[in-house]
Amino acid sequence: MPQPFTTQDFAARMTRAADAAAAAGLAGLLVAPGPDLAYFTGYQPTAITERLTTLLLTPGREPVLVVPKLERPDAERATGAGAVRLSDWSDGEDPYAAVAPLLEDGRYGISDNAWAMHLLGLQGARPGTGYTSLTRSLPMLRAVKDADELTRLAAAGAAADAAYGEILKVRFAGRTEQEVAADLAALLLEFGHSQVDFTVVGSGPNGADPHHEADDRVIQPGDTVVLDFGGLKDGYGSDTTRTVHVGDDVPDEVRRVHDVVRQAQQTAFEAVRPGIACQEVDRVARAVITEAGYGEYFIHRVGHGIGLTTHEPPYMVEGEEQPLVPGMCFSIEPGIYLPGRFGVRIEDIVTVTGDGGRRFNSTPHELAVVH
Image (cartoon, rainbow, N blue to C red; front, side, top):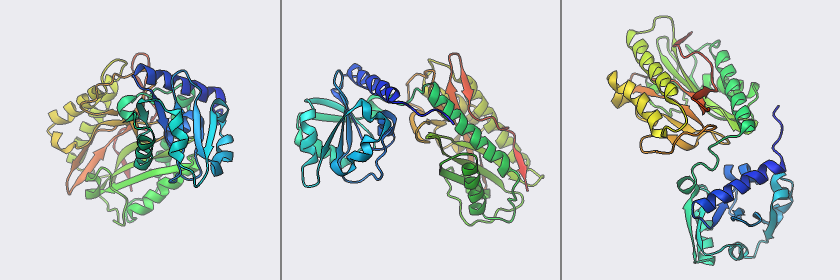
């Protein structure tokens, strides 16, 4: 079990963020409930409601966490509360009037998931302010993980690997996708996940839909099945994909497509090193698939960041010129999807090291046979 983050850990994160805001020419940051607030304070409101909660990070000033009065006791119990000044407002009062005096005229970064009505309320209360999303203005805010975060991500990856090892032992043929997905979810929980975010089981033609939601299709002998699953363990995400075949008689085309995807995934992993642009990881994987004649069937970016959530910046996609930095963590998941027939995807979570990359998933990439 990893050691809990301390008040000092959260204080250091808030200081770094305020400094990054200043370097980006921002007046400060407004952090909404969700992964950003959890990252900076450890505070997660019991329910995210219409009541305004926000953390204000301003360069050179004490952080302020504004909360509804009825939720103040919960906020006070958060580990990071010792590093902020708490301010509250009561039902019947104008919450934006409580925040406006804390703001200066200028442009602020604001959490992507902040409610539009809160942003508009703040603009109305302080017309001299403007706002930009954190992903646009400070995409690296949570992207570089420290040693404790890397330990959690590695453990989450190992737990997902253990679940995959066990799912290969269950019966596929004659059972529905939903039944296999339920097995996967149970295994993730058995191996220490506190939350299951998704269990994609795409059999036969359903495998050609990258985000297929497991349904009542009965898996047949001869099906190729895409298994994509993940969730949170100790607060950090897992996300891995392997493709299996039901029965020993694997068609040549399935083997060929799987080999192309496996080569693309390996080539992209080998390209990972500090300094290259995120888009380059996508490009090298895409080049392998395109050269093999399947370029039009690779229909999504090659990867996404992972941390407190299973999808977050940075994104490995054409047009993303952000350089890779040691400690960044993201998926590499090329795929080929042949409509009406089958799909293949292989995915690992990778972190950037000082001279390359390291996988958090270690299960074999070979096409596994199940029954």
